[in-house]
Length: 495
Ligand SMILES: Nc1ncnc2c1ncn2[C@@H]1O[C@H](COP(=O)(O)OP(=O)(O)OP(=O)(O)O)[C@@H](O)[C@H]1O
Ligand SMILES: [Mg+2]
Image 1 (cartoon, rainbow, N blue to C red):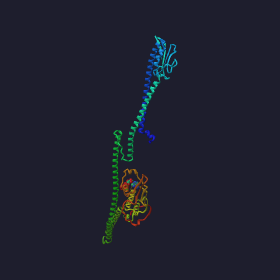
Image 2 (cartoon, helix red, strand yellow):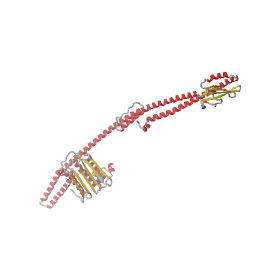
Image 3 (cartoon, helix red, strand yellow):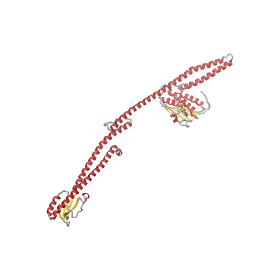
Image 4 (cartoon, rainbow, N blue to C red):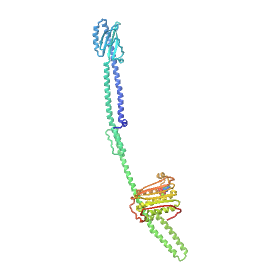
């Protein structure tokens, strides 16, 4: 059952209500007009009949009254009184005394004379006519015509008109309801189908049934739905393809990081094994030249010193390169020691900063790729702080719980306008690289910053994803450990 408000607003109701209202008004006017015409026709006819009858009776009666033959006059009038509309006939003499009175309701001798049947209010149309013979008054004829028959005819006409009007209204309502139902039923189908499409159901179909406007609308709707469905399918497929490409891309990045790290590891080993050995040999040789100089001792010693200095310098450079490429401490002592060494070195180099770090939890069981990722991210963050932050304090927290690794790096520097960066106005590779590394490990990367309020990086990495290669970690760092260190560097030192 529809709600009253929706019933009044429904197309079907409005259609029926307006058609029925117009029908009632027009038919009432029609019936009223017919009755008015019938009434005036009947009353005019009665007036004309009455006038001609009384005229004729007055003429005939005059002759009988001159002959004082009232018996014949009465016979004559008796024939006339049988006229069905006639209520009475009265003949009076010169003194207005009744000499003959016929009819059902004989009036007193001075009835109220009417001019037209339409103005009668006692149900009888009373008329009178002087009887004159050779210009001499002989008396009067009084006649009364009953309006009952005329009223009866008018009432019958009115009833018939009202019945016809009523039948027409009922018929109109039935036809309008049938048409309205057909129309609104199909519009209802359209609206239900549209709601289905809105809810994502593209299998809806509106039956066309006819070729009228609604049928054409249904056809157009069905075409539109199938087109929308086709394009939605296309979009979904494209989105699927994009997702697939994205995950392939992540896999590629993951692999490229692996390859990169492997390569760095190899280079570091080669540099160490080959170049390191060579430099050590040069040093040894230089020492031996220095020790065994027979003559021109000073010059030989100076050259040897120079070789020593250069080789020491080369060694420093190579060593620094090796650390940068692949911090051996990461493999030898594990992530925790590598981080400590990296942070300590950085703090020494940035002695104006107060640096506080806290490493907590089991880092030994982390997969190799996770360890390298954490190390590289800390490196990049520290570089960024030195480059951009102008900070006086840095906090690093690394917490490894059962399922996840949480890393937070924050500073109290100048920060930046995040919106500008997000709109690609300030693109660098550091933050993007961090995000990609973390996403490749199915982790979560975010940062929080605003001008004047420092920079804070938040990272979470699930411990059971990413690289499946289990690192050969030294047992020294494979235990739960907590380190807290507050440091205010006063100078710059190198490892
Ligand atoms: N700690 C920080 N404090 C203030 N601004 C920072 C900080 N870290 C990064 N930014 C801002 O974010 C930007 C992007 O950093 P990102 O590391 O991605 O690029 P970069 O350091 O400029 O260049 P790249 O790392 O590629 O050498 C920087 O240019 C800098 O404006
Ligand atoms: Mg950077």
